[in-house]
Length: 392
Image (cartoon, rainbow, N blue to C red):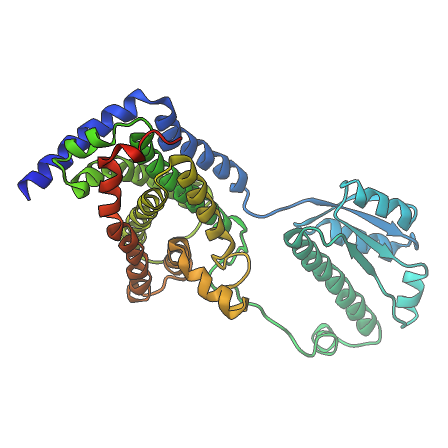
């Protein structure tokens, strides 16, 4: 045990020197993660997309059609940026990317409504951006529905009904929606943590692979192993501790951005989030160890590690729900620590779930350390024999 501690400390000191002397190492470990997080902080600070430009084709030019246009323009998502003369003009503007949707108000709109008839308002969107389409469709539908109820209330009151009677007849059924864990429906509350955690994951893997891979590439692997008193575990521990420490500091900066700048809520345990972040970082360091030991080639390991990390976002269930995936893909989503980490974050930050709900996910993340442990002897052999050195 004493030799292990000495070897770990000696390797730690050696690694600090290597970090200081390598601009690439410093960039991968510190500068690039901070730049990425500052970018996402600025990107998601607003939280909800607003004032998305749309065009209105008003074929009626009446007081009521102008009222509908005004109500749509007053919604948070939609901005009536253009009044067009025909659909061809609107479609051309949509293809040019100048607008996201077209609202068409038909001829005789006011006449039909005041005559007790039905008038259809058409809404066309591109379908190219799911988030934008969803926001616009929701707000436009709300504005048109509110307008319709308002007109009906006026007509009923004109027939002699009081306000309460008119409201009961116009809206016999009221539908009330309650958003429990993201009441402002803020896009940044779940996307910002997801993207930032993805950056943390990618830079953890790349830094870990680079730290070990350069030893093999530069033929200093035996020196690294000897610094750890011949113990691969001590050599790995001393090499990974600086990376773990830096990534934890960056994680603190990440959470300052998420909770203070983006404004995401923290309804659960900060301790659980902090502990799961540590496990998350260590698990991806272990994945880096596994990939390098498996390939004994830094360039190949960087490619595999980066590709594996990026796939984690796709299968995390944040953009497309895991439960809606096919059974094989649901199983595949569990092959990434990222899936469990984001579940813990959403459970604790958004839902305020009991601590016990997150413990199994923390345990699952720890299982990803096992492949690295199984590869320690192989990595030691790679550090010992020259045939594994000098590969790019």
